[in-house]
Amino acid sequence: MPTWFARRVLDLAGVLTDIYYRRKYGAMARRLGRPTVAPDERRGFILLQIDGLAHAHLIQALDEGYLPTLNRLITSNRLKVAPWRCGLPSSTPAVQAGMMFGNRFDIPGFRWYEKDRRTLMSPQQLDQIPTMHRRISDGRPGILSGGSCYVSIFDGDAELALFTLSTLRRQRFFESLRGVGLLVLFLLSPFRVLRVTGRALADYASKLGHRLLGLIRAVTVVLHWIFGSSSPFEAQAPMPRSSWDIVSPLVQASSEALFTEVQTFGVMLDIYRRVPAIYANYNGYDEAAHEMGPTHPTAFRVLRSIDRRIRQIDRMRANYQGRSYDLYVISDHGNTAAVTFASENGVSLGEHIARGIEEGVSVHERVEAHTYVKNRARYLREELRALEEGDRSHFQGLLTTARRYVDQTMEKADLLDYDLRRERDIVVSASGSLAHIYFNVARHPLEMMEVLILYPGLLDWLTATPGIGAVIGRAGDRTIVLGSEGGTLEIGREAELADPPDPLAPYGDASYAERQIHQLAHFPHAGDLIVLGAMREDGRVVTFENQLAAHGGLGGPQTHPFIAWPPERDLRSHAINDPEDLYPVFRAYHQVAPGQ
Image (cartoon, rainbow, N blue to C red; front, side):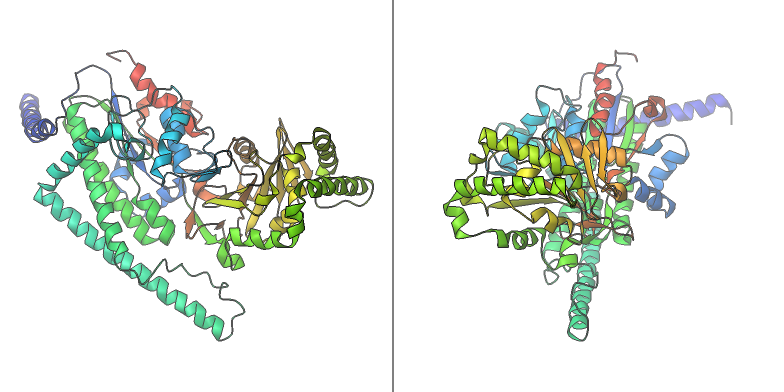
């Protein structure tokens, strides 16, 4: 075929494609009141997030054929892929805050407690999202300014944010109505409706089957216990999660299928509109991984569905050239296969802490609060002196520091700043394999020695508990890490191992873990104590929630997500050891001069 003829054919195909997209998406954009963006020469970016997919599990899914589109983009060198480190906590709010605004300060978990305000904080509490948003934005421009955001906690200053928690406020109500208009137009497409219905029914059947298997396994465990096992918690069967409920899996499957389709439709419409920055989060895999495990076939089948959406978006990006776009595919954190703390101990972490404190509480202690605390401090000081001079205990490296701290505290009379009527008022806030413990006996953050004074024996109780890998607390500007095997680590400007073995050795890169733990422990609203779930020899981590895969803490793939990027951007020149390191990568798109 002559070259000129082939060129004419390609030109004609391009014209026809352009006409098709203009007629289809142009009409929809006009009906939605979403005008096209004024043209300029800057490249835009499309950031597609696969929530919860670790780099190791991405490689496995690629090898097993669950992500053919992404695999083709990588093998053809249209995308490069590598792991990055999401830091601690390894949870979506912290990662999105760092990536979208370059600031994840004082986001200590997926959920946490603020003692100074007596307030529980969680993305699931919509009234708290504005407070979080103000805290992280703090005058910084978001990476999505002028763009669109779909299915997120924070909006990155997007012009249109659909299914995004931080925009569910009164002043953004009419913007949300445009999102409703998008949904209505989407539902007018019969093929999309059929696709959503089919996918929802298939997903529902899978979830229902999994719940039935979980129920059968749970009954088997109980029968095994009745007829000979020493404990019903010995067998590690998946949790039944309200296995008799057959309605919630249908609601979950339907909403997941609908959200996936609608946000994909919205991204494609935004490409037509030449929106400069587009972010879409596909969170179905993370939910399936929590319930079934990170490499369960059902979880990987969710990836196959997401991969089809990546193909649709990439095809739109290639065929409609209203603006040139760079495509990124990223995950915010990974998931580590998990076993529950309750299965190890028969009770939740909060119930276990209550058991450990019970012996140290009496009516007299509550009535004579101030006197009792001061007497206890004096007693502790004398005991610490004796331990310094004689035999060494589990807290060998901390004895001198502890005694000096008690001396200073008594001199300043700071011990009077307690309300021992609330001595039993304790809040445990779990985020997967990470848990913060708050003692409402004081509004200020307690240091580890204060906890030792107020709750004698609690630290030994926790470090001796199966399933707890490390207990973390503060000592001035330093961080103290107590290990389950007796090791003690002090972290300041440098890390010093006071007593071996290193408590952080089971969690991988110890120096990285030290920096992350030190930063987390000194967030204003971190727990008075922070607990890490233990790493088991089989590679599973202990989680404080009811999950078969966990993230939030350290250990295994949970802190190693992935990023796939266009080779032209040379992302390897950036050291990505924190979500905040991604912020300048995407802000650069707003600062590039036209024509570059």
